[in-house]
Image (cartoon, rainbow, N blue to C red):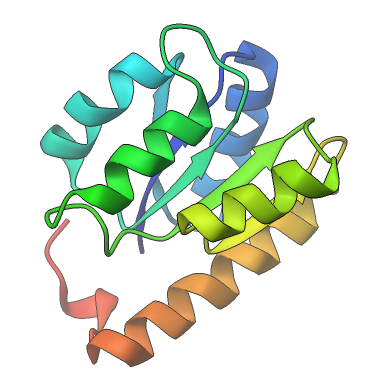
Length: 135
């Protein structure tokens, strides 16, 4: 079980992702805008973040930039999930440190599989067994 933070300003998308990821036995936390992300990271120590690029208060690219600049959060994998799909957006997000980039509209089960792959790779890198980690 992983702790996953979803940061997206669309309430229907947040609800869909919360449902899909909870069905995979993940703990899911949600932020409506980029300004909420830092507090939720501090409170819940997510194992992965699903991040929209176009959000109020602080856009996802700035959130990603700040996460990767901070020693305490740079290890957290980030999946960009956004309607921005121009080459410069995709390449820019990956250059900033996103573990993956998926354009909207998207296939929810594809996102779940990508998250599974990233968490599995992260576990192997860290030698971490999430099943032994307290919730």
